Amino acid sequence: MTVRLVIKDEVNIKLENLPLDARKKLANAFKYENPYARYHPAYKLGRWDGMVSLFGLGGNGYLSQLETILDVLNKLGISVEEVDDLRTTSKIEFAPVTESYWADQGKVWPKGHQQAGQPIMLRDYQVDAINTFLTNTQALQEIATGAGKTITTATLSQLAEKYGRTITIVPNKSLVEQTEEDFIAVGLDVGVYYGDRKDLGKTHTICTCKVLTFSIRKVKITSMTLLLLLNSLTELRLLSLMKYTWPRRKC
Image (cartoon, rainbow, N blue to C red; front, side, top):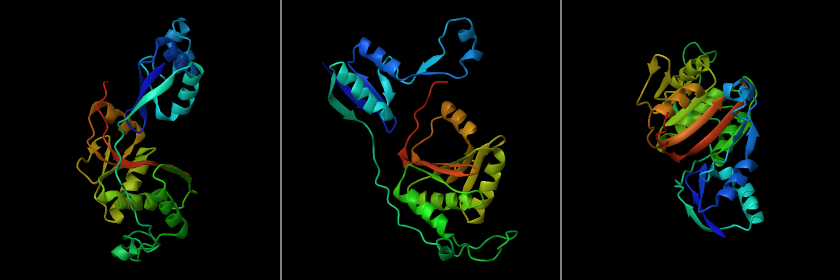
């Protein structure tokens, strides 16, 4: 028996013409216990077993599951005959940066900074982190506290300007304001999106993960170069650097 595999985008896939029994097996293969299930009324009333599946009975799953999916299908004697790859790719290339990236643009540290008036120079480990991201467009790096993750983020954001707009995600409101100040210091067109402030139309937007999740559910975000950076105490994550459009979701 053969089925059709549809790769919808960089994340989602769907298997068509797959029998119900096979879909159930796949749903069970990707079933996990919800650690908070005991707090749900449905679980307390015995109407739910507390398990969630990351593969839908409609045949919908995730690209990262594909290896396991093919293994399960092979054991069932089912093969994938046709693959419909709907992913769109954009050729995004960057030249490596050097320590003088900002100084070469005439940027100096603003008034109030401990090095006010001096050219902005990147440190060697910041340059290494930036160039690693530029050659690995989906990456995770651990960077020590105080190592300058914000200036690293600002550099990546400016580099992405020729391809579109960016979004920088931070864990909390205080980091939104801190990141905005650093972006402004190097002359970036930046706005924030949280609470009473919703600066629309900016080249770079800074927000918290909570606000972004809510916004995706409410509005359609048009195509942009999506640069998602998680700026926390010790971690800097480049989730995606590619052309992408978020579809509208039902609330």
